[in-house]
Amino acid sequence: MTPRTLTCQVISVEDLTPDVFRVQLEGRSEAVAHAPGQYLELLLDDETWVPFSIANAHRGDGTIELHIQHWPERSNSQRLREMIQQSQRLTLRMPSGECVLDETSGRPLLMVAAGTGFAQMKALLEAAFAANHDHPVSFWWAVRERRDFYLESLARQWAETHPNFAFHAVSETPLGGTFAGPRIHVHLGRIDEALAATLTDVSGYDVYLSGSPGMVYACIDTLAPLGLDATRVHSDVFAYAPRDPLIPESGDARTQGDNATPENGS
Image 1 (cartoon, rainbow, N blue to C red):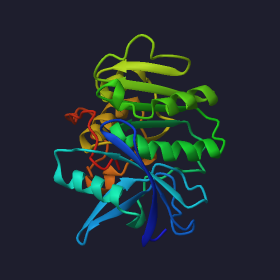
Image 2 (spheres, one colour):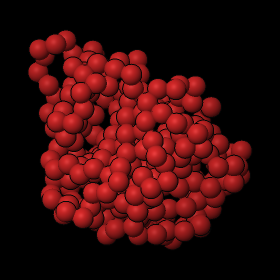
Image 3 (cartoon, helix red, strand yellow):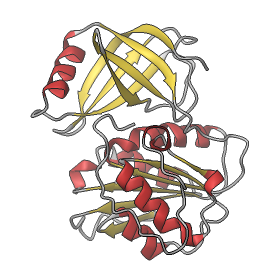
Image 4 (cartoon, one colour):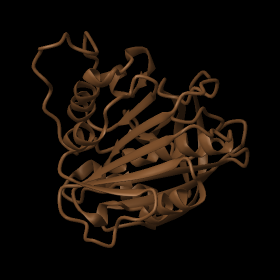
């Protein structure tokens, strides 16, 4: 789809945590059509477009959901929040991005997000569930502490209602003994280390990654010895921070990453 510029109405702005807020927008259904996993750009001023992952699959009702990390100490972040709260309409450019769900694939899914990278994974998962994807779906979400699982209840709901779905919660601080449950698994530490300690073979999987370049490439380096197929791994990072080769030759130094995610979460 060719990107187009449009205006949308601000329906609601909701704090999910002190650091993350959700924005609901509405426009003409055909104008906001997008593939699951794509992102939009929001016009901040005459020269500045800010990218955000679209946090929902196309619903046909004209709605768009965004999850935005708020950094009070950053002037652009504060200006963006004030603009969204005060404006009735926003100017967008959409859709963009090649990290989209392959709805023709019947392969199991391995989906890995850090922080607000959850937004992109949410759209991909909604589309997979709607398509009755019945192969295993393994969703890994990495954060610093429990409050950063800003839609933990939704991930738990998926685990309860989809027998083929597993939620892997990765935190840098302990989550407590009551967090885990049926198809809900807890890991302490960095996401690449948790993947390495848990997985043994990803050769048959479609892999989707959303986070900072360091996090994405650290995960790729972890998964490469486990049979990762370079043609079946997807991330927006490949467009704005490409690495050649994507999967280094055996023995090359691994990229060091962390659980951080870009400010826009895309």
